Length: 115
Image 1 (cartoon, rainbow, N blue to C red):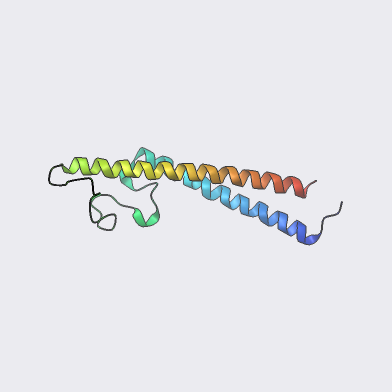
Image 2 (image 1 turned 120 degrees about the horizontal axis):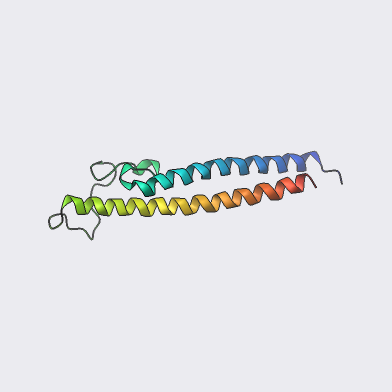
């Protein structure tokens, strides 16, 4: 069966989009792995949230369940590190799901184009 030009363009564009999603999610996987290994470095966090407890743009107030007067600075850093690991784990899961979707999209449309 001969495919129309519009159908072919659609199929190749979807394949190209799947490749872009694949590359983006692969970069997200690498970034979140580094974020889980070193959460204080800011890896794995969104671009606007980079920094650490000393960065004024990261967070101006401690979390509500932390009393800074009773706890040391090390405890506050531990909380921020835990939040960084949680954020990195979330990004890892989202990137893996996007990677799976991109692979499925590409395979299905590529087979459709060449069938």
